[in-house]
Length: 225
Ligand code: DX5
Ligand code: ZN
Image (cartoon, rainbow, N blue to C red; front, side, top):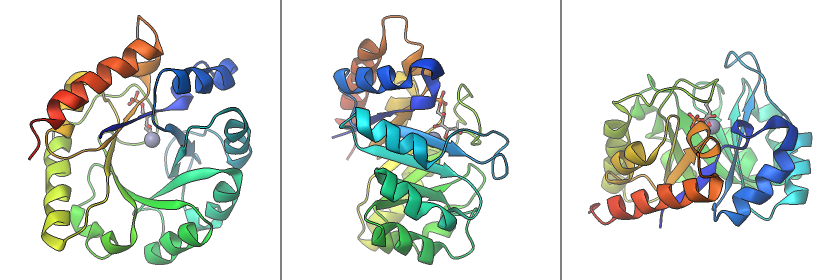
């Protein structure tokens, strides 16, 4: 099954609680929470207190994407706040294995993510320890950017690497996802789709957007072997 993880900060910032409930009613599988520090990426968003507040209004698993330097300083706080998945950038932490271990020890599932220009070779040693791999299909920092066309090839390469080594954790794709791009990445093995601006700006509403994305994903999944 392909999971859909709407990126909550693309919703109306004055009504995030309402947007979380809408996402749940729309049939989303997780809620993607983008945490930015103004240092690793050129933008600032929210912290653990927001995750805790979100947790109190939704039953959806919280898929927390840390775009921050030295994430090891904060993983425990995000786990305590209720994150189901905590994903860190391989470029942002010196001791990646230790950081992944800290996430798991804190009771959350651990994801690792790569910026568009980061080679998949950086995954080789960490893949046995992670619960999810996130392939960034835009440079992190802002929603509403264009999907980088080589991202589907990268997803295919990560899938191939996992197959060769006998691992099978979900590949998530984040940035510029719409039904067309969803088909491109699901066809080659993606299983979790993040979508921000496309979903929250859908002319017929979030539910229609989730359904459209899911239909696209299901048709592409049927082509994946
Ligand atoms: C980018 C974030 C994404 C982004 C998704 O820095 O990690 O999650 O908000 O938004 P769209 O789907 O608009 O690219
Ligand atoms: Zn994200």
